Every structure is written in structure tokens, then in C-alpha cells.
Image (tube, rainbow, N blue to C red; front, side, top):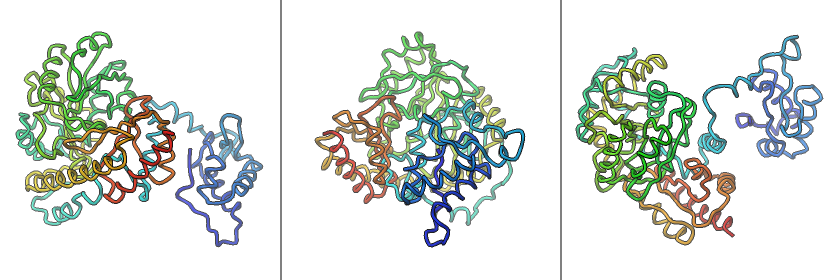
Amino acid sequence: MLSPEEWTLNKSSQTPLHQQIYEYIQSKIMNGEWSIGTRIPAQRDLAKKFQVNRSTIVYALGELTADGLIESKVGKGTIVVNNTWSLLASTPPPDWNSYVKSGSYQPNIQIIQDINKAETNPKIIRLGTGELSPELLPAEKMQQMFQSRSRMFSLGYSEPKGSIHLRELLSEYLKAKGIIASPSSILIVSGGLQALQLISLGLLHRGSTIFLETPSYLNSVHVFQSAGMNLFGIPMDHEGLLTDSLGRFKRQHNGALLYTIPSFHNPTGMLMSSNRRIDLVNVCKKERLPIIEDDVYGDLWFDRSPPAPLKAIDNQGLVLYMGSMSKTVGPGLRIGWIVGPEPVIDRLSDIKMQTDYGSSSLSQFAVAEWLSSGFYDEHIKKIRAELKCRRDFTIDILNAHFKDLASWNIPEGGFYIWLCIHKQIPIRKLFAKALNEGILLNPGNVYVRNDQQHLRLSYCYASLGQLKKGLIRLSELIQELSK
């Protein structure tokens, strides 16, 4: 459903308000921006957006109906039925909505679309957003780096696997994590999502089953589902993903691979123990079940570094390891990497060349400079300290205002606190009420279908003042809905 958020009424104009609204909607339709079949926002939503009486909206829509541009249909609302092409041409234009609905890539569930839309509003308090606050991003340092240009950069395409200089630096960087990976076994990708997309396109068959933790970030994106894959959740405990039933599940559900976030899991913040990591790798070796290890939060530890990645204890090429700079330096860089057996990396790099012809050479240059200059080590220490401070601040607020309402974990790193509300409440209603008051939440049903008791809280984006204001009001809303 479309909304007029990019346009406002001129209330000082001599043109009547209903006429301005009529002309705005008419132009959207006649220019083809609102194609045939597009649903017009509800009258109350339009009245709220334009800040006018509902009668003004009714008058404007009545004129559009009289012109034959829109029509109200029972059960479908008000939709566009004509535009300039269908009024003037004998052959009507294509119904773009039918094309949109027939595309193979599945749309996000409505609540995720609502979250994505609300995140564009700078006035919203974002209590669940999984990215560093703009005030924590090293924009000034990045600008200085480009201005100094200690090494020339290219504006051309990079090699199929990405900049060899960057891959050499990543090879050294990964050694500190216990991962031995030559540059030829590393593929540069445009963030973690592209890595998953390449894997789904290049390594898996339609109908395959992906195992993942329950809950999981992977449920909030449809990259595998859109490629015809099925997701199957594996329970967790305080040490991480439970391994006991993996073999049975693999045989019962034709499991193709396991996706896991062992370090500072999204959305729970869980840190998988060292023993559980060893168990997981051993079980997957026995069952011949490949692993995708998502380690984008691995550098964001507070008091001590996490156990060695699964890839570091993998001696059979079982693990595809994913890393990224999106969570540590800046999401706008869109630079990540996949580490794996060379034949797999060769296959994925070939598909990447078919889809985008390589990741941004400027972003690759920037990441290489950060790693080679020492900027990254300096920056990550500051980010760890800042995130730990924000975590402690958030926990203090929870202790003061949520003690009787919910329980929560205390993460040892990363971005997230998994808040469990004691009473089951209508989570969609809580989301809507909070959003109406300028507070954006990430409900648990984004990560586990039908979850009515959890919220993913993030302390990495909102300012301290926003965290305090937003969380205190959230506690009040939960109390109101619990009565």
C-alpha cells in the first residue's frame, strides 16, 4: 500500500485542500506511478497523513471515482482501475501488480516491511535495529584515509574473487582467529546477504532443507525460501545449538546444510560454548552435514574473546565461514567474505561475476587500508568499550523497569538482548502501539513464527537518551497490555 509521505499539503494556498489531494492522487495515477490494481490507502490513513478531516478525503476520492480512475470493491478496498493509458488507448497497459505478485523472490512478511519503512524516519526511536549508531561510525577517519591516499586505488573491476591485496590481508587477519585460509580460498562479497544468496544459487537444489537455530535471523530474510529451500529450526540452550538430534533430523528432513551464528547470536545474543562448538563440528563431520558459520559479530566481544570459530577446528573443509565489516566499520561499505574449499569458492565467484561483476573496488580499497594501517584494531577497541557501556546502561534500565515484566540474558558481546515477556500479549498490538508513539520494536515473531513473548532489543543504535525514554515507555505499554 502506498502513502503520500513525500508530499505535503500547502495549507496557505488558495486551492482547496480536497482539490490538492485530488490532483496529487490523480498525478500518481496518470503518470503510471500507481498502476492499475494498486490499492489506495484507507481514508483514515490518508486523513492522518495529510492532517485533514476525513470528509476532505471522502470528497477528493469521490471526484476520482467520478472520473473513473478509482473504484471501491468489497474486501479489496479502493483500487486504481484506470489511468491515462487505459483511458486513451484501445489496448490497456500491463497490470504491473500481476508481475509483482508472480516474481520468484518472496516478499518480506508485513511486519518486516513495516520495520524497514519506519527505519527511514529519523524521529523514530529504534530499539531493535542491528547496526551501529551513526555517531559510532568512523566517518571522519574514513574521510581522512581517502584524502591521504597512501596507496593508489582503482575505479575498475576487481578480480572475480575480489582484490588480491584485500584477500592477502584477510588471510593474515583470519590467522588471529585460528583460521588458516590462503587468498585463493577467500571470496569478497557485497555483505553477508549476498554470501547467502550465492550459496543458495550455486550449491543447493530446490526443495533442500536448511537447518538453523530457533530463533534465527535467517527467518527474517527470505533468501533461501525464495530459492525454493525449506527452513527447519533446531532448539538451543544456554550453550548454543543442541546437537543431539541433528543426525536424526538430517535423515528425516533431507538436511542439506546447517546455518549457525555461534558468536553473539542474532537475535538472542547467545555465545556458543567451546565444548558445544567441538560437539557440533564432530556431529556434522559424522553426518556429512556442511556448515555455514556466520561470524559477523565475532570481533564485538566485551571482556574476553569468544572461543575459536568452527572454521578454526574444521580439518575437513566442512565449514563455509562468513565475515563482514558491516557490523564493525559501517553497513554502507557492503563488504564481506566467504572462506571455504577452493572448488566451492571458485563456483561461488563464477556466480558472483554473473550477478554483479564484483564488489565495489572503492569499498574493497577502504577495508584493505583499514586492515593494513592499524585503523581497524584501534577502532574495534573503541567500539567494544562503547557497546559494553551501552549494554550496561540498558541492563540497568531493564533492572529498574522490567523486573516484574520480563526476563533477559546479559550478552558478552554483539548487539542484542533477547527479552522474554512473562505474560503472553498480542505482540502485533504492542508493535503498533509503540510505533504510533515513535518507538520501533523488533518482535520475536520476526525470528520465530507465532512467538508472542519475545523482543529483540538492541543497544547499538539508539542514543542513551533514546534508550532510556523508549525502554521506560515500552515497560508501560507492556503493563497496559498485560492487564
